[in-house]
Image (cartoon, rainbow, N blue to C red):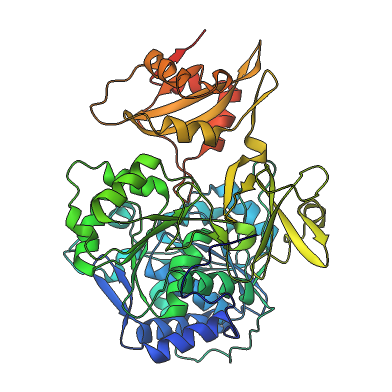
Length: 560
């Protein structure tokens, strides 16, 4: 199979640092005075960052009795506090359990119990949700206030979570403030972590049942962090965004760990705010934007976006959903930027595939990255299918998780071995083109069965995005007494656009096969987002079959 490999990128990463902590030490020693983090006007150097990580690690060991291998919850918004907490947990020899700040109290109780965490580092705005977990099962909780060092007045608009959250006069028993923890004067124990030691335990959202934690080691974390950095040519002049949620594998690896390991500057945004993109990019000269396609759509739909903000931008990259072709074309036409799509899972600590920067293909996953093997298999027989045919994508490589945390029955369903290589089944359907690029069709579990015909929502969405009146859309299945299932689409119209349900259905009939045409159209003001800022099709799908969405839709049209 011929594969276009990116120019200047070695196929082998070579020796990696012994641990994530070693990578941080190396970066801080090389780039001590350089700016590591920019946060609403606050700038923190690598030497200051390392000092705070060491202090917090020492407090975890001495004040919280954290031992090697202990799991520690980390539940914060994007902030310097998240970065420091993450690396301090690792530096203390413990395992990070990153948590979505949107999780409810009951969800937190499950994560705490499942991981057996006894220590947590949280944002002050989440204190009420943790109240019932203190002082047991959580014995120690460190509470951070994100705006504690922001210049006053801030040169940038702060999100409500920072403006409105204040540290209470008295903390619950077992809780201490961030400043108290950072006042630790004792040194942490020597960093003895090795490549095969556990580093992070991220939970998958899953489509059914409770979330499962993925066992990731220092080596699997370092592999994707450094692979991406070298793929995109990150260097000392790089200014990278930290807008994607840092608790999620994509943001964690590209911005947090990739930035730290390479010693580059990361501009962090706590909550997504499209109106801050231009001011931040212009002031700090952002060169690499790691973004969900929805972020790019959001920014370019702003009527007063300052095009000069992208003057120094050279890379725009992301994944999780296909970039609408119209938006990709606008990026290319106005700034000469090609959106570099990639693909990965929580189980693989993000990327397994990336598009070559010099030869990207639109709406394509790309090619397997350094040290990674991938194929397309028959979901029933596990046999490899011919090139060009659709099947389930399988991957193998150093970034693949060791397995699920205490879920051997789940491991048995996702792993298989071929020719001595251990492959992970992704649950995604796709195919390989003549150049060796992988293309996704949809999630195996997302298929819509319309009278026996298979409909893939992502394929429908890609076509619908060609309509000039559509800003965003999401296709789900809807129960149908005659067909079993039918196609429904939720649409956010562009500002000022004139579009009706009947008009959209008529247009779709000329653009796709009859059985793929949405028979129900619902216009909404916005689409729900997941914690990683992707369109949350799962919640729309679940609500549709529970019968709630008809009451929530602002308007809908049904085709006969």
